[in-house]
Length: 346
Length: 251
Image (cartoon, rainbow over all chains, first blue to last red; front, side, top):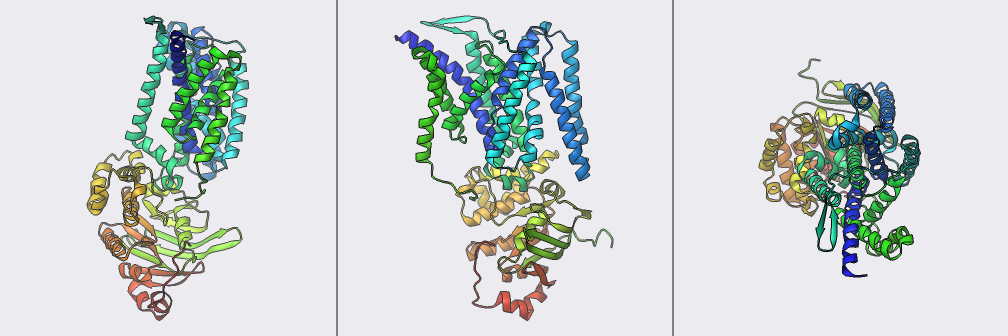
């Protein structure tokens, strides 16, 4: 292997790694705030990419039905809770976001010819479809069992993932798609040919990370999410409801997943079940950070990206095996350096 | 009873059970507007349970009326918006976050309702606790015991509560700091904050309070104006007796 190949592989690794960074951050965020090991994270990636592809091809995206159904489910569950508690404070908010909003999306999907809407218009509509799925999913599947042990939450997360992959096949078909690149030019730097899309991936990932960092350090809602992660009881006493925190967190995770999907789909062909593999790599990275530390998770994600691109050169048949085997030494190392922590520590 | 004389908090017939064990039996207390009311009693009498049930942290049976509004199912987040605040015995601070972030989060519910003046409240709390201002950028987990208690009280005050419930504010603190904490509690009354104070340090609690209850084995056994309780021979015998150091274990 000469240096130019190494450079190309490094470039590939960084581009893929940037996306894994986003997913790893989302997984750490969801776990620290809600204690859910969020397996369906990858579905946001695949569904966003495929929704965008449907819009490009002028087909009606099945995601609309998913949003309508999820919104309806939320309305039914909230209605049950409202009747039981005689608590009608949030009825308009609930109906607005879970009934009116999906209907507006449906009307937009049915009336506009999205092939004419331009790439940015399609991306905006894709985000409008995918992002609300996060809070809806939390309300339907996780809020009723929010106090359950981590293992139960994990099992439900796996179930949601399996169900979504099935729905993905039904909504998008078994065919794979690539979407149009955001920037079609290539740049020659020495031996490297850098596609514009690669610059977009790295740039947008960095921008999103900076944005998230600002959100968590500057805004009161960001601080509230951190507070919930640090001390759930303390947060409740401040009136920060774990349900609100959970919905907000899954909204962020859906947004991060959707952006990742939109960024990678011009580089990688996305199938209805691709999300799992991408999400799992983000998960390996998140484990390197102990599902708690953001910088370590980001570094881990870059490592995963690089390892993947180099192993695809040396032993392409085993590239996934090599990446996932990484988890064994990492877990071993973590088990050596972390001491047992008591459950109820102040 | 007209609105002016109606107590801010009325609790009647409150029962709480942990499994088959009844930790609180038919407890009834009242806190009037602008009053300091204390609940004293030995370890494990159910004092913390009482506060947790009123705040909606524990399921309970009985009647809780806050500010004239019955709370059939007390809900923490809702009660916070209505002006109730609890400083728990464990303080429950956000240890990794800065002192200032902890305080700002105390105003979360008010911010959510559109009250954007939390910076002013922050200055008021800093005026009350200058130590917190000195340490505003420090992580809450690195504070000393007394400072942590000040932060917990300051954080609760950020929500501009009308009823502040304090669970063992003097627990584990040096005598000098205990005196400081009680001085601040007394000064809060002048700001119109009603206080429900749960204490094992009965002497200090009865000195600062207007009214007192004695909770023993999950039941209210005595109550009356604080100065009368302080001179009651039974209270002196059990709680104020000289040289009788009570075990300072978690309830």
